[in-house]
Image (tube, rainbow, N blue to C red; front, side, top):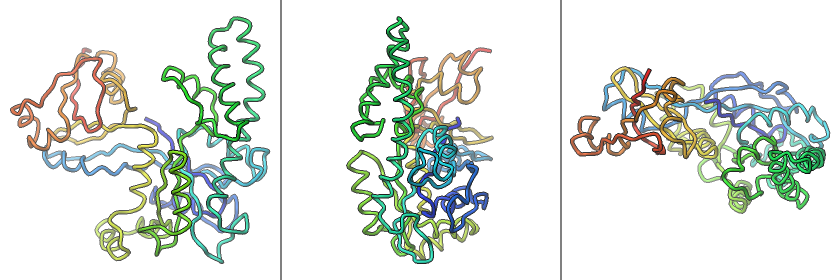
Length: 365
């Protein structure tokens, strides 16, 4: 569905190493100098979901197709980026095109890898990036709000609504808070999104730690977690170095490597799931002998919208969805068992799709 999560951070914090591991490629150049990534690299990654394999096993599906999330590796921002420092304007434009931000923060000491600020202080790094995003938004809104106000006074209804939202966002920014601090009514979210504010995007903090701290984190990552909790965000601990080593191993060897370093799963699985959750997405499944497939839809989407994710004709001609919850499908050992247990439901156009639903759509040609 084209959901994008932009990987941002100061130079030399491990963004490109993390991206390489995420996409299991060397598409992004990882080097010890600022701006080694000039053009944003884009990679689609499968969203880990053990439910999919369980469904495929029950249905005897020949193929398993996971849902995917797009990550964009954006070059390192520096202080002054909002004013064009370090090619900042170009990089900020790349962020604007993303739906959410995965903010990689350096939480490790290493004398061989230069820190652009000359010290290791992850909370300060977060504030540097946040400040640049907020300054860019401030500059944008200080120019746009007066123009919207003029249109609103001229009787333009949409301009009036947009002016109210933009003015509220400007007030938050002037008070030193990001645009996402604005309190919105549900019907205002689309207009708010049209402002394209960088600091309005949901944020996930990725704490890049040394190998020995990959399981429990360290003092630096603890400070980031505290900061994330204070603003209702999420922080995930990973070691980009470990992840890059896991990524190049054959799948059958990855489990042994993880056990050797004391991990249950790759840290990147947590990053991907956290990014997916950050975007308020849910997964539904289609299952059959040919394939078991996971699909993505926004939380709160109704059945016709989910059908449209598969094919636009399904949404246009939607009649009903044959629906079984994941747990009911598993406990019934498939559709037939779920039917016998009374867990098979016919849902109409107003049905809100739930995470884990196994769906089959009926539609008119």
